[in-house]
Image (cartoon, rainbow over all chains, first blue to last red; front, top):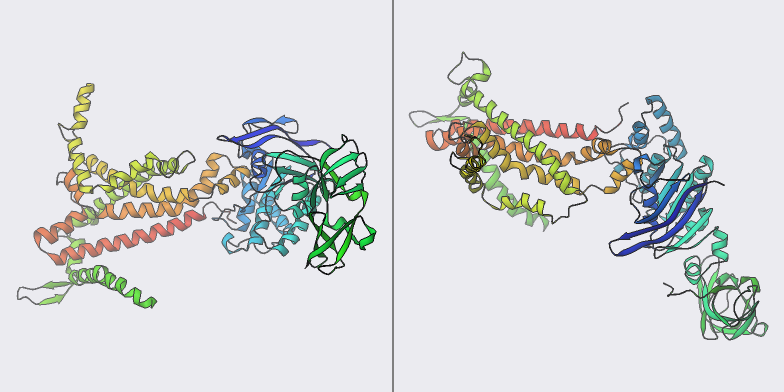
Length: 349
Length: 286
């Protein structure tokens, strides 16, 4: 697949503060790429650099192989859906959507046709003459998407577009956005701090923290094989336990040696172990070397979330069957569900 | 309870707004005959429009002419303060300036002084042997004798009213969401287009209140033309002042005041209508 956008060693400083620290990233044609990270990790700044609203302190930004750092935003072949929509309050819905087309000097019948088509796509037929202030958050959000999509950009940049919506609407819009992206064949660069949103929608996720990209990969890769404790902790829930690797395919943690599938570590190298709560199986006390006492049970709808104190660690376990508080249980983990990660420098935030 | 808090305000409004306006209205439609009896009449209004020169064309009649000159001066003041003020407000609201910028301070600082004092200062600057001419002479340039001319009056008006134009526009521009401007750029608009389509229409409320805040007092002023025009510059404000304080004809003075209020109402109406039309300007017409 051809690389559409490429960020090479992008650095951005605000005063003495480094916001982006050598970002390297490429985005393929038709890809849905999500920049995921906690607030202040530099994901929005990255998006604004791609959009042309910020100039990087260093590095280069390529579009179809050519640098576009000198190109002002209005000449870049991409459009943005802003965080708080940034609709023009002095124009009605149709005028907002037509803004970009009128700048392009499209003929009136063409504009009208494009506006009508895009209104159908975002389910806002009949809202043409409505003023922006009379729309709900979800409707405004659709207008913002329509206004950007109607220009048929090569890339659509979306800055936490669903952040202001309630949970139900957000879930619906996630599906709708993904459908639109596939239907129209437009490259999406999506910024969010919501890991579930990222997992649901993306082809590729880039996890960011403190101005760096920690891991790039498919949602499955990132979830199943987190590269370090931060990613593991940020994406989904996990138990993170320090451990060592006495030899290949053997890992020692919580005073028990487990069989795993990882290899290539130094003898007795210190590592971090990640185990997802749903990957821990509750077995009878005598069926596992790791036993503990259930201290807490919470009903979460699909599953029960249990806390099990075992060998000096409070384990988070998800199971559809609940064990009563105070019961002693065995915890079993399959070898391929133990994720061994090299120790990362610094603390897990 | 809420109503109780409203009473002082109501009292204040009655004493300082309703009562004076009512009195002016009353005076404008009454007259007192030689015997001391008060009667209702519209002759003051008749006098204003017919003056004592009934044969003359409408606009050259004495008082109508004064009104026209007042409105013309107010209009010129408004146009010039707008042309000077908008760019200043635009620059101050831009990224490079903070709320505490020196430029903003320089615009607000003169407002702390009494405007009479400020206008007197211009006398010192503009007079024959004043600061301006001393400076020009020092440069070897011919001196300017503009004090007590139309230019001096206009200069004084623009100087005094400029902050009233700048500040509302500045506020309107400052509170504009920068993302809206970015959105316009994002959709392909270059800087002039962003300004015409988005920034200017959205600053219209500021422009309208700026124009109102300059035009209204400018049309009623009499101190500035008195001082800088050397008493030769006769405007509606002077006319009212003259009728009340010198001639002692309160009835005719009140009638002129009522006419002025009428003119203001009409211009406010036109302005707000214009403002609404302008705010729609960026839109698509079908």
